Amino acid sequence: MRKDILTMSQKEAGRLHVIQKSIEKEISQRDAGNILRLSERQIRRIVRRVRQQGSEGVIHKLRGRQGNRKTYPGRRAKIIGIYRKEYQGFGPRLASEKLLEREKIKVNEETLRLWLIEEGLWKKQKIRKKKKRSRRPRKECCGEMIQVDGSHHDWLEGRGPKMVLMGYIDDATGNVYGKFYDYEGTMPAMDSLRGYVRKNGIPMSIYLDKHSTYKINKAQRYKEWPFRDQEELTQFARSCRQLGVELIYANSPQAKGRVERLFETLEDRLVKELRLEKVTTLEEANKLLVRYLPRFNKRFKVSARNLSNLHRSAEGLDLNEIFSIQEERVLRNDRTLVYKKQWYQVLNRTRADKVTLHECLNGKIVIKNGKKRLSFKKIEDIAEKRKTVIRKVKPGKRYVPPKGSYWRDSFKLAGSLK
Image (tube, rainbow, N blue to C red; front, top):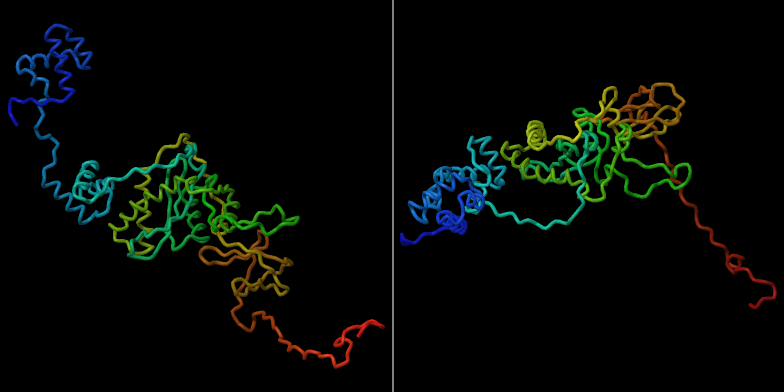
């Protein structure tokens, strides 16, 4: 490139035009400053440089020079090498956080994003056109509503068993609670809610989907009075009703979008955290979750518009009894009952025809008549179990009418044609 050729941007060309007008006294330096949005002092500096150097005076002095913050090639190669070895598949933001947390290397996430794209380790994310939906504002108070769901995902990436994360997120603050289980069902739902209540208190309402654990979706069994208006509840819904918690059922995943977006984040970040800690079992995953969620909440939790906490204390409530499988059983004349093929003998004298059996989450059995607990024992001896003997009766021989019988020749009226 020839040295006598001057390259300048459109902005600099426009600035040179105004400065020349100021030098030729066609406009004042104050007017030039107003046009270029610069101070009079800066205008005087540019005018002085243009008089001394000509048109070159409007070009910035750092043009063509290396920036003071430029990363030297060795540092970039070191970071890319660590990324390939330890953080393959991590997004630029998460990788930047982990490099600072574990390797004590500070690098801007956008800088790292450009490096990874140039190396072919990351692809530009395409922005999908989303459907327009009306956005529901957050609740005002903490504990006013929590969103609950279960995430079925390969959390251990094949290193261990399949797990389900039961996730809870406060709608007002985004505070998260969760625990891993083998499956999503009644026992995990009850156990996780019991853990949430013990830690945070009883919420006002729960927003969840219509999974069969939470709601009976079939038609109601009772159609006649007095059971016509009686609602059938799942064991989980019954527990929530005993706690005074309102259940709100969502008609679509988008309706409870806050917990759905939470799982999108955790299925990226938490999976990689489990990978870095080399977790292979359900117990190890839950231990890591106890350490991880406080850090997660500290970063992503927001302040509620109203600082009131609507969580109620669970003091005085027997949570183990509330969060149990409760079924009504017929008490026989000899005060025995059966549950899951196991016979129990009630020791208290009672005239009750029916009692309620509670199966707690730890497997403990409690039998109650109303609010009164009854003493009982298991009937282990097979001879003591009540058996119903069904006698098989052989069917008799089929009766065949003889020839000439009324039943064989059929009924004929007198005088009828033969």
